[in-house]
Length: 105
Image (tube, rainbow, N blue to C red):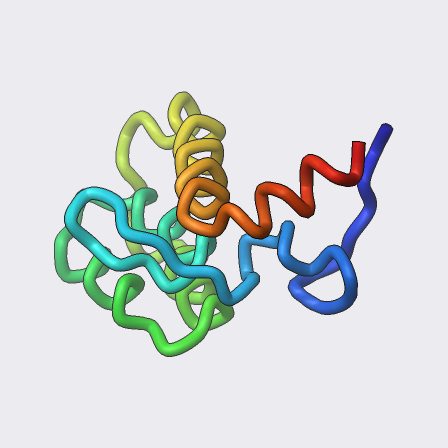
């Protein structure tokens, strides 16, 4: 069964990468999955730190999509793994959300 949701709003908004459900991974507190995903596009620590410290996931996304910043060479090969790892970390940190997801069947 497909689950349809849009952004971080509404009943299923907790599934979105923008949802306000932070987690610890790699010795860093990630405010959202979006922060985690966008920061991992880059090897440059300055850009990564700008994203980590971005006030909102929208700002993190804007920095991450700025094409003047140089993407890591292997981004196309690793981007799905990075998203998976971020989503998994979010649900491991928020077992109430994991239960809600499992309850959808």
